[in-house]
Image 1 (tube, rainbow, N blue to C red):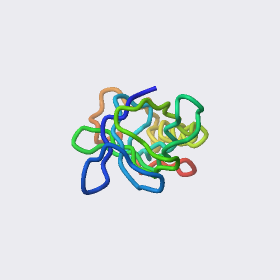
Image 2: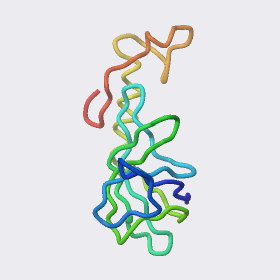
Image 3: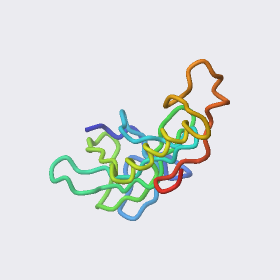
Length: 134
């Protein structure tokens, strides 16, 4: 579990967001992968510790100013700053993305994943990696 540190509405920081609100959430620690290096972000949910019900559906994860911002929609009564939530990544979606990402470093030449030893990073850049596209 982790604690919500901030909720961003797009114009201001708030202490809580009601159901239906589209917001960005910063947490103390995360197991979500933010979009980076051509690999698409994770999706999933923040679940209530007491009953495991989804409180916030994560539809995008980006890094802004060094902070990982989980963007999505509040689906339960509300999400609150300083409350603990269990973060749940959609691993069914992540698995093929991760496999395609690793494989993308092997094309068009043999290479180690995640990068070829002894080569500058620019030689190991891959195209955008999605769950169903390499």
